Length: 133
Image 1 (cartoon, rainbow, N blue to C red):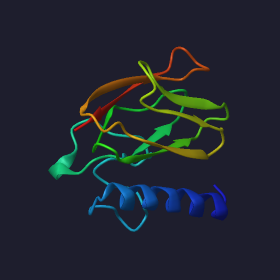
Image 2: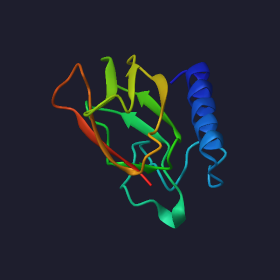
Image 3: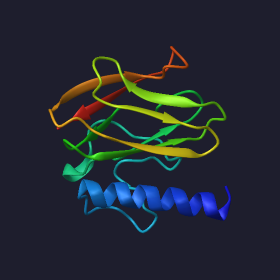
Image 4: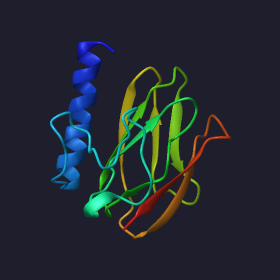
């Protein structure tokens, strides 16, 4: 990964942490309770009340379900070469289109608590879950 791309990713993740109001963000901009060493989201049960604020698309998958606060800014990073979306299955709760090869985007989580299924409009086999609480 180039220095410029790494810097952009770090800034995007840091911004997501600041906007979400999480106090547990590390100096790398990633929330260690919310991401694995590979950068993919971990289980939907955050540690110590922290919330995940990022989704990493890799190998045509979204990783494990994540949990966010209502109205949180969710950063999406696409590590695949193909373009992907994070599109709510029902209604227009959220929709972000992210270019491949490290492309990033953000969306605002719904303000209503609940579980929101999502998919990629380009790849029908890709599905994920966002929990808002």
